[in-house]
Amino acid sequence: MTDAQTLTPKSPVCLMISGSGRSGTTILSVLLSQGENVMNIGQLRDIWLAWAGDASCTCGQGVCGCAFWGAVRQQTFADSTADDLRQTDKEMRQFMADANVLRDWNDALALRALADTHAAFLARLKSVVATVLRLSGASVLVDSSKSPEFALAVHLTGLVDLFVLNLVRDPRAVACSWVRKKPGKINQRIDAWTNRQKRLTGWHDIGSLHHRVLRYEDFVAAPAEHSAAVLQWVNETLPDGVFVTDTQAQVTWEDQHLFPPSNETVLAEKREQVTIAAPTEWRRMKYWPLHLRVLLRSFPQGLAYVLKFGRA
Image (cartoon, rainbow, N blue to C red; front, side, top):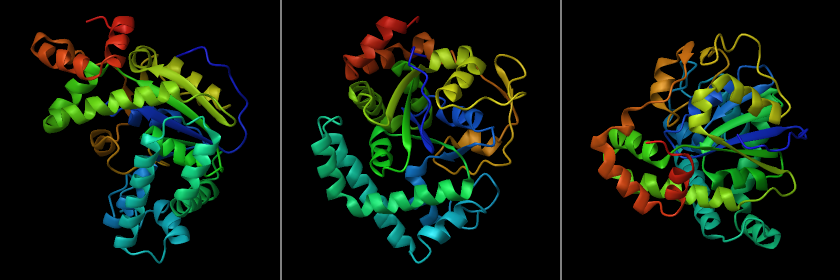
């Protein structure tokens, strides 16, 4: 964790966990949302497709019938068909594509032009976020969408004080984790890691926007310490009893309403007793060709990370 200044945020807050997949974002979001003032909204950027397909929720219902997400839909998209919802998802992805090619996210004029171009989508997003805040009664929303472009969209709604947590993991470990899940998309995953790190390191604190970096390797080494520090950053506290040891947690899923594509293994297992530990399989010799591929494709961000932190 960097020595970022502890701030007293305005209410409400959206804590966006950004970075790449396979970096512990889902379990971190669960740990951070064990208190009554913090609501875990999972990967909000996927809610329109989840509604369109009535994806399963960890509460045991489909998201359209879920006590939480079903109510959000009824108050925001009640008259929308599955095709309408898919169209909103397309509008979101177009916003993200346009934001991705925008050179400077600290340029107020450029951001205003982006917001004007995508005013319809941002109005729909604002309606969803406002409804989530109202129904949850939470002072802090935790979102693990990981995409900086989606974090920017939430920022442009003007509804929340945005805190961006860059949860960054060694790109070699990320690639080795993805190769077991989606071996045909490794280049795409490496590029996502690289592009997001470029964007996050260039997006400065402005106005109600705040940044902090948490290395995955530091988090898994001392999850209790870092979970408490992140919550302190947004003026919340980690409830007593969540961590029974420095690395073992006792969590409840009672108020968690998460849906895929958040980590499907975590969602399926819904473990109440969780041990946080760093996998070491990715360091084996057999993965060295993939390590080299990662370092070449992610240059210079990947190499800089490895030279500073890598111990393999």
